[in-house]
Length: 304
Image 1: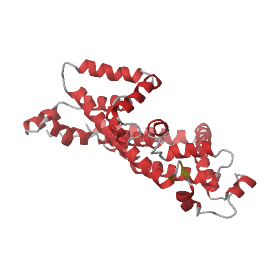
Image 2: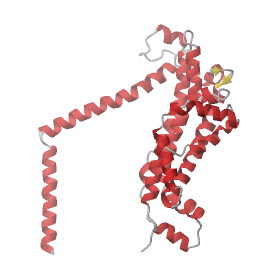
Image 3: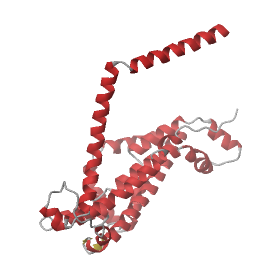
């Protein structure tokens, strides 16, 4: 036994020495240097557009037009971030109202859509019923059906249900349980041991209690990931507002319409200011939840 332990420790030391020697070789140093330069340039290419956007948002319109956009502002116009809430208007809707519209649309769409996705995915994955193959097949079929093919019928459905240009259109988000989020949650719930449900049943918990208090907390990792993806997608969605909510434009819609309406005489620094403010919530959401994606992906609660 002692001989095996000694040989194992010797092999580990030898392996560590080999790795240290590899790191000192010219080939490894050259490879590491090249990769560092490539990744550094890639990072700069991602960060530079945002820095350029911020610098040009702090200029006057005259300075932006008359000087190079690559130069920093001569007079830093921080007041642009205050004036944008009064100057920036689309269809007589202020920037502040567009911000409010983006918030209720993104949050409502995310909460309702992801929750219904959890309910449907859990039901299909954990329960056996006669219509299960039909439900699963319909969801898979809708994933393959082109979105433009159902555009006309969806538009008519909104008029029939009285949801056109109505905030209650969020009800329609309850039907958005298909696609990637269904596959992700279905695979997660399908992979959970049956012992969790059996233990809850022994303790007297019903199906709904088991889902809310046991299964749903265990899926917090993928749920948070889907919430972030859904929030960002809804936040950047401008077509829904143009087609179905013309009286409730969000920030993405407002920026698009502002650009289209004022191409010849647009106040570019004000446009860039609105763009920066639009991007900030997405960055905050991502920074807050970037570590939560994998923190709860593996979780256990069974006792031996």
